[in-house]
Length: 384
Ligand code: PLP
Image (cartoon, rainbow, N blue to C red; front, side, top):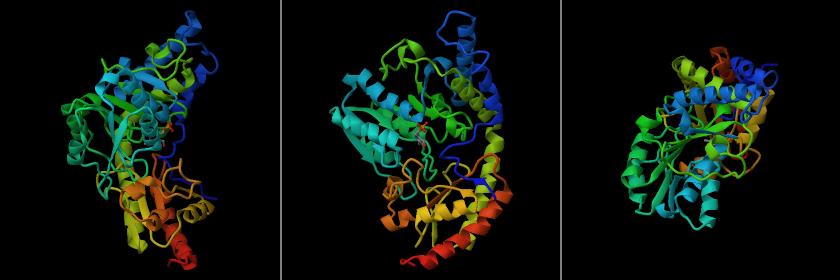
């Protein structure tokens, strides 16, 4: 049976070169990076090499990165850590309606700590308009957190403009760049980013490792209490094989960025065009041009997302409807609702996220089976 993976925004396979880079740190060089002896030094060297590789991918200095257990922890660390470390900065936070739950639920937690959160609306294409941010900023706004690229619909924000406005108002700017790091160019300095979250498993690295970029001079508190690892900002023995893998993945992503982008844009266009040409009553979700390369998302009228996924899976195609974290729940995606779609329409969502190993033949196959699946589901639907 065919096996076509088109769910790269959920996670990516570990690249074979990344896997090779990790292996020695499970076996021959198993040391604790805090140990003084030779084994410890090998491990510490691997961690510092990886820090340099990841920093280079986003234009940061290595000393500005803290390794975390992934994007979720980095998001929590950014928001809770910054606000706890700077209580004098004010009690107001701004975020957007289409953030990942790692941000939205952390903001809910901060409300319980006495903070006030403004959740900005987005345009029907998923853009946070700078003017909307400008009018929400207040003298007591401590932190603005707006994601770089959306995980469900791929829309990319104008981070430079949003960060600039935040700074004018005296607020610090965080971006959840879990979906964009390694996929589109990022330069934290040029873009004016103070805090940035990244996750290795979205860029062909291992799961369970990520990082927080924290601009030099910015004070944040640690979430975890324990040893003095990561400059006292993240207690706990460092997961050296995972860090080494993240570093290798970051270096490969930097080397391959332009080739991968061209490949994904080409396949994405074929897929998008093919779907709109062959299937009636379908609408693209997200922005038509300001979107992640290879991220294709639609809503099909009169079709239920879960059924679509199961039938695609029967044909060997792996995709998702909304984000992987919310699948299994019957609630429509908060992102699609924030774009102004109705509950019915949001239920018919499909996200196909392409990766470097997808081919034009994979796209042809999806274009062969998807129209049949949609037709069949519409025949069965009481809504059709
Ligand atoms: N933020 C965004 C935009 C994501 O897409 C994800 C994961 O899907 C996360 C945060 C959480 O990252 P992690 O899985 O590394 O905890």
